[in-house]
Structure formats: C-alpha cells, structure tokens
Image (tube, rainbow, N blue to C red):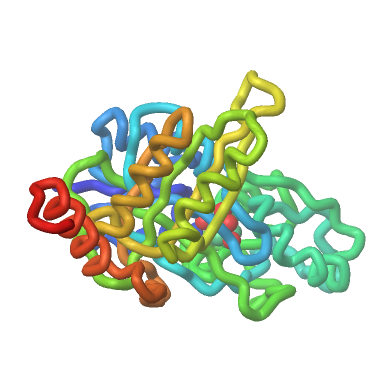
Length: 306
Ligand SMILES: O=C(O)C(=O)C[C@]1(C(=O)O)C=C[C@@H](O)C=C1
C-alpha cells in the first residue's frame, strides 16, 4: 500500500491538500515538516505533503530548509487552497462571558488573522503552535483557550466554534507540494512549474547572471526566495521557480547554463501548476526554435552549411 505522510496532526490545511493530491493513497500525519521529509527519505512513506508558500506570509521556511538538508526529494504535484479560518474554543467555554485569554496557531495562520484578532480578541495573548490542528489539540488539553484552525478541524476535535470564515485578506491562498524520491517525472502539460535551489558564488552579479539565463530565454520567473546557508554568515541559497518543464529543450538549455554559473544546483521538481497558467513563450524562444537552432549548429559542424 502506498502511504503519504502529511504535516499534521489530523485537521490541518495540509491534510486537505493531501486529500486533493493523493489519488486514493493512504494518508498518515506527522508532527513536523522535517518529519514529513524524513518519512520519505527513510522509506517509511512513499510521498509527503507539505505547505510551501502562502500569499500573505510568504515562504514556509521549514519546507525550504528541509528541501536542502538531506537526500534530494522532488515535487511531483502541487495544490493551491483558499485559506479562511475557523476559531475554536473549549466545548464548555462561553466565549462572550469568558473571552479567551490565549489564542494559538501556526505562525502563518496568526499572521493571516492579525487584524481579526486585534478587533475580536484584543486582550488575548497570541501563542505559536506547531500547526493549526496542533493548536486545536492544545485547546483540548487545556494548554490554550482558543485556536485558529482550518475549517475541517472543527469536525475532528470536540471543541466549540467561536467564529468561521475568518481572514484579513479575502484572497489568501497556500500552495502545497507532493514530494517523492527522484524517479519518473510527471508528463509536461504546457502549464508546468520547475523548481531549483542554487548556491550562487558571493561575487558581484552572480544572482543577476543566473536570472539573466532565464530572461534571455524568455522564461518567466514565478518565485525567488533566499535562505541563509546555516553556519556560514552572509551566504545564501536561492530558491528559484519558473515556468516550464525540465523535459523541454528551452528549459534544459537554461538549467545547463545555470549549472555552469553556480556552485551547486539541486533540482526540486517539474510538475503541472495548480492554477493551470500556461507558460509564456517569447518569439524565438519556443522549444521548436531551440531544436531548430541546435540542428543548424550541427549542420554547420558537418560542413553542410556555411
Ligand atoms: O497548520 C496548518 O494547518 C498547515 O497546513 C500549515 C499552514 C502554513 O504553513 O501556511 C497552511 C496553510 C495556512 O496558511 C496556515 C498554516
């Protein structure tokens, strides 16, 4: 039986994403994002579902760091979920007569409801939990008075709903990845995303040079994040996402050029985009153009063309 680990416990947004991404595979929760990676690396799971970025709070740094520490894993699929929260309190609490004094959640969740908490629970101390669902467990255990959770958590835990549809920004979304060990790549669809992490030399123009390789080939960048290299103050790795699939000649050409320009590149996957946005192809930068240009060089080498 194929088993997929997800960042849990039960009732996280990540579990919802895993249900979208895992076609009937058995799901099991793990407590942390590094544990989800480790489950695949150790062979305890065949895949893992983790959050990677949120449209309000940005990158999920535990996911980025786990992608570089340890054996390579690749993303084979992604899901994009709209994010709106439910606030839960203990089953016996009357939240109007006895307002919560503490409210807990994942840091990304707290950041997305800062305004709402300031208005509706101004006196409550905000505490960080390992995930939204872990905050619900904390309310059950008497550790916190309230939890900011995914709507499905209300079905998993015997708690009282204090508020629903909570979000400071109506259009908030989080993107999630399904990770596996490197192997068969998903087929290209024309609406794909490729992800790499690059260690660029600490030299003038080295990052600009890498990005220029994409720009020169008309490849649209979709994300750029920097993370510090641990234990080496002032040096960074760059997480670069762009449109296209590694099996396309134009993408392969760009990857090879970036490989030449950097100290190291780790391929993090090519997979269909959840939003279905098709790749922009600039004039002269299509796959056919690359193939035709290579054929022309080959003909010149053979003396068939002047
Ligand atoms: O705690 C959860 O429910 C998660 O799945 C994590 C996470 C995140 O990392 O951003 C996912 C979606 C929401 O943006 C809030 C928290």
